[in-house]
Length: 355
Image (tube, rainbow, N blue to C red; front, side):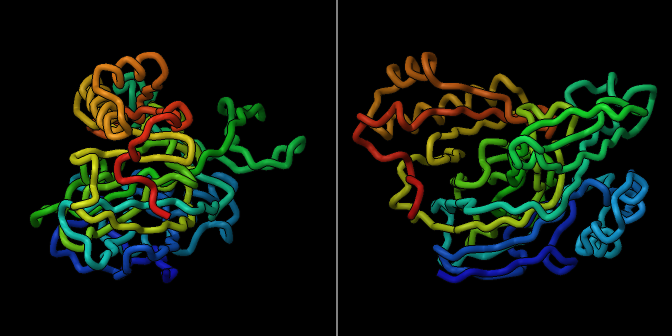
């Protein structure tokens, strides 16, 4: 195992679209290697926020020295057209030697480290779950600065943001860091917009996939061409305003390759944690996204030894399904299935968590 360092710099990122076949990798690794990547949030650097993170954050009380230099350099020098590209700063692609279409790339999040003590939640341009209602009073953009603070009673870190304009009252909530965007390259010459997720992964925004989780991605092009971005410190399922608590993370990722002949659940997008199986569904229609997540859940349970009717009955009795997000052009849904419930079953869990 080799540990690779990957900073987010103008030469290692794309802004607003996703890698595809033929793109030059910024790094090559072997299966089983570890990637330590410094991700950059798009919030605070976008055009409608002035494309000047120092000015944006200092105007909201953040010291200039606390603004990340890599965010400043990307905002200054990386081309970006918000009219045709998405907002996300995407780091990669990373070529995984030996990866071929039909394989599965299993991306395990070994650790996540906060790179700042502040971030942003935004609602903009009639997007989010309530377009036409918010932002209010005809505004194009509403952004609120969120902070990381320490709970004086427990010593634990938590999120905090104002309850209203002009008040000192704040709401406080747990931090649940995760990468909202993890994906693999797609066939053909087209660079996909960074917002809609799909079978390539991408902007899935599944909050359950934090430290200790693994996302299993069907490889679509030689080398897999992994990329990451959209770091979050916390997100409520649904992500209803449009963004989560967007802020930069350092992610330590292990990249394992499951060869095609060993893949047991095919054509499925799913993740897992030590405690949970997390089937994922994506579709323009939220109901269809839920149905896709249920079908993948059934496939995972059948692979463990259940038959489909009993699997569906179990899911109805004990499986939880949540809205991942409703703001990324395509809606997402995911299931939460307790592995402990399945302890008496004999079959393996799909591709299984490596290691």
